[in-house]
Structure formats: C-alpha cells, structure tokens
Image (cartoon, rainbow, N blue to C red; front, side, top):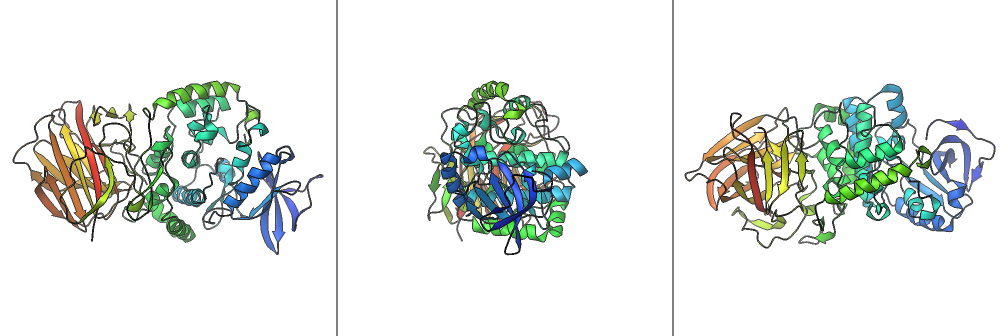
Length: 581
C-alpha cells in the first residue's frame, strides 16, 4: 500500500463508529483508510467485495481476527476492532505514522547499518509476538513494514489465512502473497498444509536482504522466474556483511526445519553473551524503545516457544514446552527436489496478474551456516538416543536437554557448501569433509546454555584433521575446543573481529588419538571454570570469563595450512546436560 489520497466516489464514509477521512492505500485484499476513534487516529482496512461475498471467508476471518487481537503489540500495529459481519467487513488497527520500507528503499536506497540492524530486531520482535499468538503472517514484505519513530511496525497480519484457506476465492493460477518474499515450501503441491511460522522467517530474511541491498534476494524478474529461483537457487546477498548476512542466509534455507524460529532470531540478535557489532549498539542507542519492545516480547514468550517447522511439541522435565526433533522419512533436502519440480510447473502458470499483491553465528572464517540461533535452555530440542555414551562427569549434571546419535539428519542437518569446499553429511555419523584449511561449522540445533556439560564421540578420519566443538557461542564468538591427534586446544574464537583465535591452553595427550578410532570428548563449563576430559579422564582445566552463554556447535578445524586435504572428522552420540547449582 502506498500513498495518501482523498476519498473516491463509492468509498464508504462511515463504518460503525469510525468516520473515514482519506485513503491510506490499497493492497491485494482491500483498501485502507484513515479514521478516528475518540480522537485517536486508526487505520481501517475494508475487505474487497468479491472476497467478502463468501460466507466461508467471513467465518475464517472472524476466527483469524480473534487470534490477531491476542498478538501483543510489540513492534506490530495493534489490532483494535473488527466487524466480520458488516457489509463490507473491516478490520481496525493502530495507525502508524511512518513510511513503509518499500518506499524508503525505493527513494533513498539501502538502509544504513544501524537502521538495518534496528529493522532486523524490530521485525524479529514483531514475528515473535505474532507467532506466540498462534498467527502466521503469510504476507510479510517491505510494504508491510512501517518505519515508525521508536521502532519498526509490522502490519497486515491476521487476515491472509482467511483468504488462503478459502480455496475457491482464488483461481488455480493465483497465489496469496508477493512471490519474491515467499518461502519455497509455498510453491509445492501441499503448500496450504505445510505452511508454518518458518515461512514468515524466510520472508524476514528476504525483507532484510532487500533493505540492506536495495533489491530482492531472488531478483525482480517475472513471478515464474523468481519462484523457480527461490526453490532451486541460492539468494544473492551481495552487499550484506557478516554477521547479519549469515543470519539472513540461515533464514533463507530451503528446508523450513533448518531455519531458526522468530524467537531464536530475536535471541540471537540480542544475546547478552555476545559482543554486539557497532551497528547493533548504534541501533539500540538510537532507538531505546526497540530494545524495550524486544525485551517485553522475549519475557512474554519465555515459556511459550514457537515450535520449529516439522517438529512436534514435547516437554522437558518440569513441564516446559520444547521443540522436538523433526520426524523425517528421508533427507530434508530430498523433498525439495520434488518441490522444485512442482514450483517450476506452478511457476509456468503464474502471471503478474495472478499474484494477489503482486547476529549471527559466524564471521569471515569461511564457515557454514550452523542453524544455530539461541533459545533458552528450557526450550532446547530433545530427542532420544539409546546408544548414547555416558555424559561428562562434570558436577551436578541435570537431565539431558539434548541427545542425538548423529547417525542420520535430525537435530543436525546436511549441508553441501560448494563455495567453501566443505560438506556436512551422514554416514552412520555426522561426517565433516573439508578441502581447504580454516574452520567450518555444521547446521545444528539452537539451544543457548551457560553452565553446561557436553559430551560427544569423535573420530579423526584423515591425517592432520582436527575436530572442533564450539560452546557458549553467540553472535560471531565463543569458546573453541580443537581436538587434534596429539592434543586438544581450548581457545576463544572471534573476539573483536569474529575470526581471531586466542589459545588459552594446549593440553597434550600422553596417548595420541589413533586414525579413525573413537575417543569420547567431554567439556563442562560452570561459571568461569572450564574442564576438558577425554574418555573419562581429565586432561585440563582453564579459568576464563570471556563468554557466559551461547550455542553448542560441531565442525572441523584442520591443523596446519601446509597439510594436504581432504580433511575429514566424524561425530556420534552427542549429549548436552545442564549443570545444577
């Protein structure tokens, strides 16, 4: 919706108690007007007559409005009133006095780094609030983000499902949404069944890419071409810089289960243990209301995390909801080969007229997207692994909050990174193969831990390979444990520049790790005390206070630049436990 215009002949002058003053804009589902309610400006969205004529729409609209009214007003335009039975039906929301993102970028170009990070935090806050109420936006795009003073505001949530679910309201060659911001699963034959909050997270990444570069990440060609790119091609993120680029790339994953939830996005952007980039500090300093809104959204959703796409809801000890491991009947990427074909077939029938509305993990060290964005320990993913070895002997461990045999994709995901010459695959273990030096992290789960015990079986499958485990890892930095044949090094990684490695201790092995044999590595971190064990025996302890909380990540870190690739390591039977007081 763009522009402000006088009322036209045929426009309503009054709806209920609202006297309409002028048009604010027109979108795919109706027209929005400025009105006043007891002196307060409000925006009244009037649904198109052809849509409103269907009783099925009105029934679903009534239900969706009730859900939308439960959305906390954190970086969203608050839903104030609605009348689904009026002719025409309408929705009343908070009036936001500010331009939309699409107009701002079109007129002024990409946002500054501080404004871009403020946008990232604001829209993640809005999605956290929207998803916590059981609502999926379904049409998040630049024109639905208003740049209001204080913090960005997301609008137009809570209506799209009523139209989308009423299949006879659109022709078979029509889709609800703007193609360039639609997730790949929305182009498959079962799109209406598989859509989840993960589709909004994908749209978040596309919106941020547009705001930071001035162009949609999958191009601005015809809808069929864009749809095919979304399903089959990587996004063009040229112009974005880490760490935000890495988070955008993660949210644009083809597999919805590999994307973080909106709450995890927000946790990552505001993780208290991370060293915030200058742009983030500037954004929060310039817009203090933004931090307050984000803090409120996090507090309001602390015990109600959004389930990850493809996950069931389970509970940990104490009854706290948690996202369980996805049920998989095959590789997560396999179904997207079929979806790609379906998208191409669907795209050939799309026309422009058929479109309804026409900090992250890593720096520049060549690592891959690890899928890791924080969420509180109580909401970490859980699965069972009957073959898992005993955990580290760290004091007072609580029950396992994560356990995975790593024999197939589940909590950890497949990644084939041609640009970095690295793969994370499964062959009865999580196998990481790298054709060049430098660290690389594999896509994995998203829990944030502070006092924690981690144990995992490690095999070094080729000479000069070193396995790597990161913990208390947030933003672009955390602790690194580098396991080589003759020693284990405990280091800080990423302090200051997102890449620097500062070795705190080198712990030599009396008995080197033999090629392709399994050793059990265990790390416990309680307060400032970090202990490393191998096969149940302590090999060293370090006292350091650099990092306080973050994710656990698995990957590879080849030993020397002069060594010959390929480098290959394997992990099995990982277990994470929270340490007691």
